[in-house]
Image 1: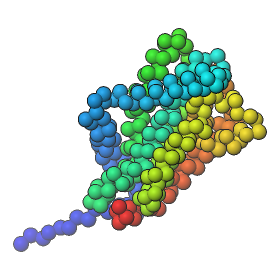
Image 2: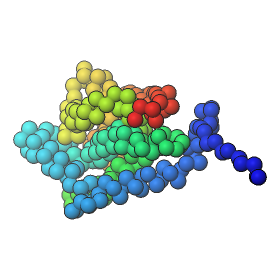
Image 3: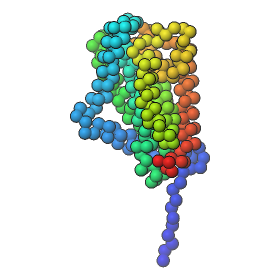
Image 4: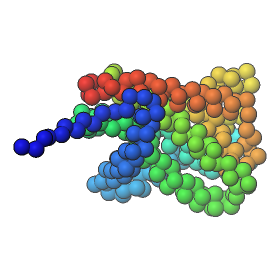
Length: 275
């Protein structure tokens, strides 16, 4: 009778082993992202058009309320272009935060069956929102062409601000996805945070209207630096960058991302037991 060998699959014990596991399971990462992309628009009447309708409708509302009624300044840029340039990073951040915060709960059956780095799940949810951002970016190009507004060489720096948006989304998503497993109340907190954040972020208005004495507190909202960076890169000198505030946002995003990874890793072993 031949000897039977028992194979035990277990996670690496060290931090370096964990990051190696992330690379080993990269195919699972892409599979989950692709699955979520397909599921999001499955059995919908207009499919991916929803990723365009939402920012467009928000742009129209903000243009009417802030541009026409409140008559807030747009620094010489067509108001719809100013708003939509800010909608790109905000919509990406809001969608990524919503999807990633619920990602572990939505994949509870997968967590309890097989080992893989759990960080893959919320990270793949952020990738889905990145696809929406690229679709919305194409619409912005059409809007800018309609108004005959062309970006200058600063647009080459846009990937740097996109990276900031990605790190902010991942960092906040890791915090909230781990907290949502332990405290299910966070499924109700996240929609409130997204709705509240829309109005305290410079989406429908320019950061230039914020008084100097409030600027420090204003930039404690880390997404402010990302939105201002997008506007500066896309719209040029009409929206000059407030560099001290940008540095504050960049530091907060870095801390949020690093803290999110650490907290997620500390909670990761208990996910299968809790869900």
